[in-house]
Image (cartoon, rainbow, N blue to C red; front, top):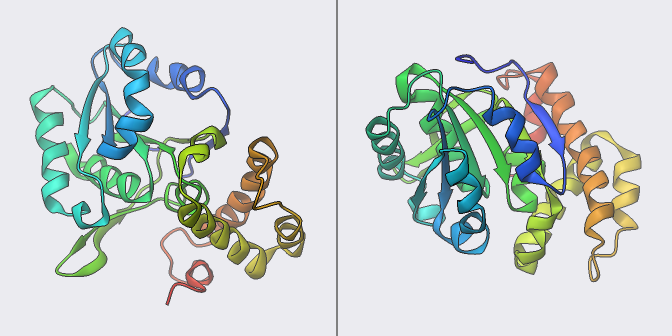
Length: 239
């Protein structure tokens, strides 16, 4: 493939393995890799190991936590890619929350001057925000997302099944981001969020609500990909 599309394909599915297969087949054998982080690997990614092995896909696991969103973790991914023969015609599948998709996306965009990457976000916040929109980055010098790039993933696969294992605080954090999308652009979206039962979430119904929230973000990103103007509205509530 070599060069990412301008805007990524957003795929909503309860079967991420089936959705990954067509993308894996687009790349040469041995040129598809997985990046994930420890907590997600224990909960989810390790369950796909046999699937990855059948496809000839190797995996790198970085430490969990915002404190590991740094150049050291990026270097670990770079070293893994280099040692396993990755090149600019390769694909990196990033499975995790916003920290992981930001960091591994940055590693992909800078390795060999840029290889393709695909995000599989596993938290609500990453599904409606971090994994879509083409921002990648790491923390540096005590500043959040100080170093990064603008580059879209080739695709984002969103599966609300992952959300069944995240804690309530993280779920509410993602839900707050959806409320923000409603406030800045869609009264209809805001209304459906008001009617959603946070105490007993219906994850299948949530998948369609997430689609509406992502549509809001995509509207701003398409209008202003590198945040020169209208996209700054997405920072509402961040300060």
